[in-house]
Length: 126
Image 1 (cartoon, helix red, strand yellow):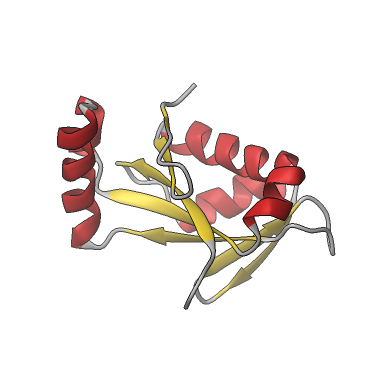
Image 2 (image 1 turned 120 degrees about the vertical axis):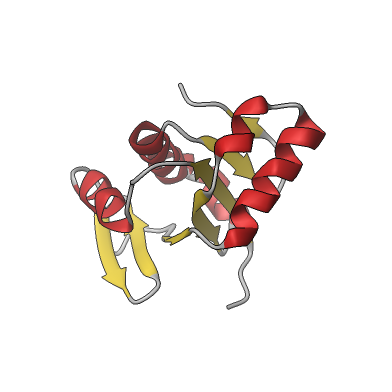
C-alpha cells in the first residue's frame, strides 16, 4: 500500500496490536481492520492515522543500522515496531493533537523510540 509520511515506534517486548487498541480506545476513536487499526481524535474527525505492528526480521536489522549510524545503543535490542501512516502530513501537523496522542500512547505502552520519516528525528521515551 502506498502511503505518505509515517513514524515508527521501535521497541522490544510482548506488546501487541490489541494492547495498542485498548490503550488508544480510552481517549480516541479506534476502528480495527485486517492490517491493524485506524485512529482518530473522534469519530469522523481528521486526520485519521493508520497503525500496524511489524516484527519482521528486517526490523532488527534496521534497528541495528540506526544504532550504529545514530549512536543510540538502545536500538540494538529492538526487534519490533509500530508503524503509523499519515496520508496528509501538512494537515496532520496542523492538527498535531492526534499524532502527539498516538505517539505518546505507543511510547508509554512500549517504552520505545519514535523515528519520523519526514525529518529523521528520533525521540526517546519520556
